[in-house]
Amino acid sequence: MNVAELMVKIVVSVSPDVVFSTVVLLMREKNCSCILVSENEKPKGIVTERDVVRFFAKILLPDKVANPYFKDVPVGEVMTPEPVCVQETTSLYDALMLSRSRSLRHLLVVDENESLAGLVTQTDMVNAYVRLMERQTELESANQALRQLSHEDSLMKIGNRRAMEVDLNFTEASAKRYKTSYAVALIDVDLFKKYNDHYGHQAGDDALKAIAGAIKSIMRKADRLYRYGGEELLLLLPDTRGKNAMVAAERARKAVEEIQLPHVESPLNQLTISIGVASEHKEGWQALVARADKALYQAKQSGRNRVCEEA
Image (cartoon, rainbow, N blue to C red; front, side, top):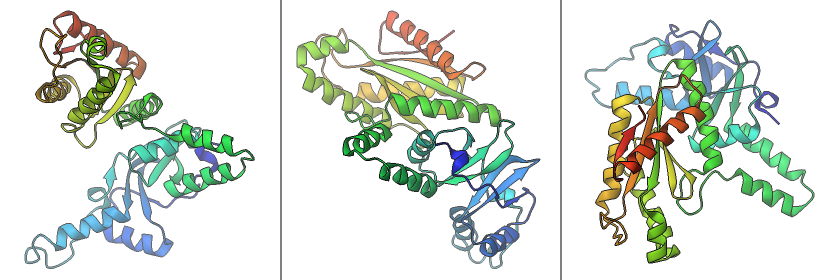
């Protein structure tokens, strides 16, 4: 099943210069929870009930003297810009995973020409998934499908490899659509095999959880962390490139260094990480990750516990 089978094909849409009050009245008239903002049939933004509440809170709560009356504004100033879009051919599984991982209630659907085709909600997707589960005649088949829906690594409590691939696909498409950039930082725990051999696998698992926690503590809200495989992690940095990506990666390296996990088999006497960074999106995300992997190799070869950018 794909999102084209679930989406609402007739969607209320306005241009960015329509005034906000008109949009609010339209939401009431149509009894809808969101209004799409488009220009030349291309998605520009979305106005949800949350955006409406946020706008009224902004004009009423901070300074009632300065804002005694409602001042109408173009809806382009209120909308959430650059909404997350999926293709009509996107599977229910991938769309639901994207909605859950980014806490999105609405996903816009575009056709092969990037023109607006419709809207699908998280409720629509969950209900569709439940209907699919109800059709299963074998309990084990249903349990297996539920396990496949999971997007979290059970040990580190971060996204798993499958979730990473889905997110990178959508991040790449969004970067091309809105002409923005993104970066990836490939992270490897230095001399982790020696750590496991000396301290034991339980200590190794505890160390991986501590490292993931340290990195999450310095991440921006938009950043996402995934388990790439084994002791390798991937940090996805939307709207980031070049120097800023290096700064973010260095924060992650320092955060792990500061938890000071002892590692007697390391020349540094503590557990550390090496990081390879790559940005821009002229190639596909697979090539971007491959470039980050080369940079990670450089970091390893030049002494570990450092950040390198692929030349």
